Length: 290
Image 1 (tube, rainbow, N blue to C red):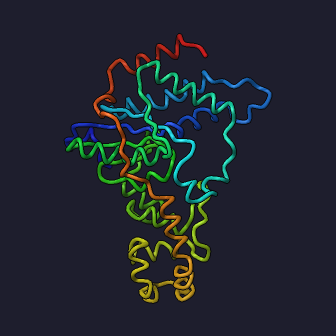
Image 2 (cartoon, rainbow, N blue to C red):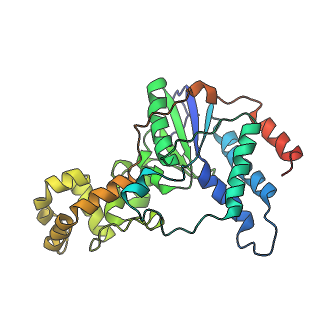
């Protein structure tokens, strides 16, 4: 694996934090099944910032962005059932999100939020903006969300746990396709976590053979007749299934695809890390009580 502290010269290192992903993790690791007990916001807060801090000292970024989801987003408009299988967010978790936002504001960090869009799309668009602004970068997406694997490349990595930094080869090992085909993979296979059903009648093995031989869904539909040349059983049935479900395939693809074209009205240099930032965090955790 190649990172910015190797011999390669990268001038700027970025942390793009999917805030909700780490908020959920830090909240439920303490307050899971907490019936009859008081919610421990303070301890969750410690865990949230300790997780961020452990990654900070491990990778030493120059810039840090805390990105938040919007309640309503364009995906729900085009597919009503998007993420409808998830439990309704609790009042306690909503309160915890407010506490995190308040805490970030107190230590001088502006959160990034764009109405109608998820953190995924904002982060994808931030990457595009950063790449246009700086010639040499390395970017770490801080999240537990596998959807971000589609953005991984030679200088963009996905990091959930401190020592689990996912690169291009890791994505191929985990899913069987390289990052540029992740959207197509989940469009065909589906994604239960987001309530995206995929296409019935296709198994993972067949999907991988199709993608790795024909390419993305656009090439697949231009070359459907070539399915018969692949080492797939019942290729005729698969041909008919793909043909009949074309509209659904492209709908699922749209839902999974992370936008990179949003106009994010920020100045990147405002998010450069001050050396006192994490000292402030420790001080507030010590003296500020909720």
